[in-house]
Image 1: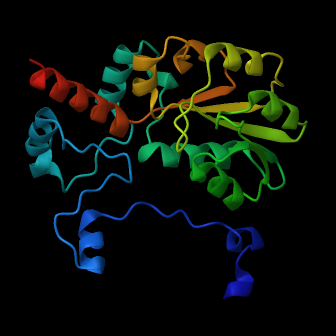
Image 2: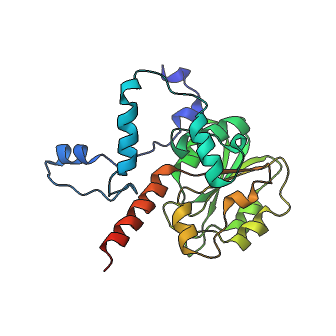
Length: 242
């Protein structure tokens, strides 16, 4: 069977997610484990989310609307963008994999920082892309100047995690503008803004990816998992302030 598998698949690095608390307790014989490894919301789901789930539980045996009509409508209003600009996936990971499958063919180049979020490299390996890893600076920031130098006529996709996971550093608006200037029209830039709410809340020179939507070669990814965490954290902080 192994000789029937594509060679690039055999070389793919496994993504190792953080283990659930229950698994850690079972494997190590521990109790009352506190998990801080996966950037999860430690305050639990919003009561409003729980109420919404309860209301639809009786229809859980039915397939949902694949076009996400109501979610699309709410988000387009909240973000100030057209509903046609939105794609929904099972987490940012699925959107990342969809982008690679859509735009990258065998042998095409993908430029990725090192280190950064592992899924970029894994998805590119699955597509049999030529991966060009560009080291971060000594301050663990994206070296966009060197990443731009690494781009050739064969490069189809560049990933930028802003802010980055795992380093926590971010690319400024000035740095991003300089990077985007003069790029080939055949190149796709993927801005992964999973932690957008944290950076936008904290840094004045942090760029909002939505400001670049007039550029058809840019994909912006965001996620509910981190934004809900921030909202719940801020709510807790306000309630405990004197």
